[in-house]
Image (tube, rainbow, N blue to C red):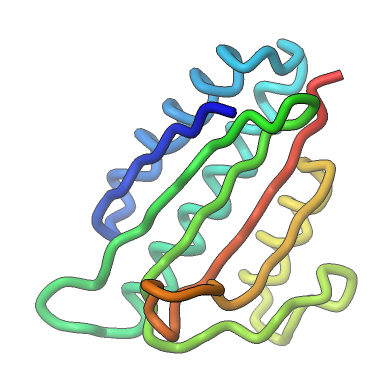
Length: 141
């Protein structure tokens, strides 16, 4: 189980790099060619969401870091995106996404692209209490 990790500042200019890394890694792990656009779009939406969360928090001088990890789990690949926005997100039911229209549209789009999606506060020690987590999974078969 190989893991690729990328950490970048919360800035829109780095979202493109995250998409490129995700697609190259997914291709290397063996995802079907016709699914690469799904990975590209979903990772772009989730990373842009993380940037908006960090910038919206207004932390100065640095808005926080975003970490993306991609893991080969045998028959699936898993992409995890963690942001360090100080406000923890409430777990989101993607069928009833919250009142923020932009957030609802982004998460609905991601749900339509990935095979499984989880949106929740980041768990575990070492993560900031407000860190947000999005986990997306795609079947390789």
